[in-house]
Image (cartoon, rainbow, N blue to C red; front, top):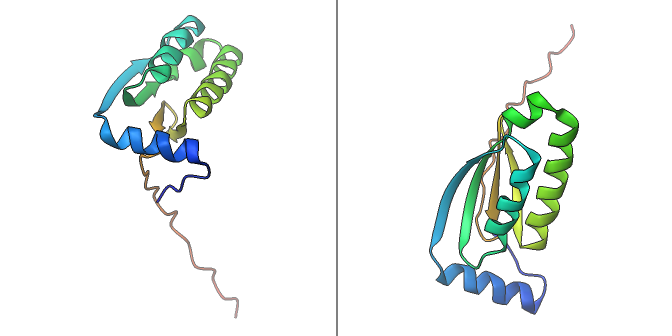
Length: 113
């Protein structure tokens, strides 16, 4: 469960709950597309973004890293969370969306005789 820390966060969370939630997929091929994503995150409509990052990371990993850092900053500023979805994608979702993560399989230690 997500808990609001301030009154302003509580108001934002309540407004998200009253709005429809959209799902959008985006494939990032160059750094210029960051402006489009920032625009999507700053709108009032709540959206879950599934962002494919393979192209930019393969082409220029330095620009890809810079893009991811700026995307993370923009997401946090607009009350979104960022999660990695494998090697090729990330998910950007409103803080009100609960994301369940897989528990890693724990391999029991072998006892030495």
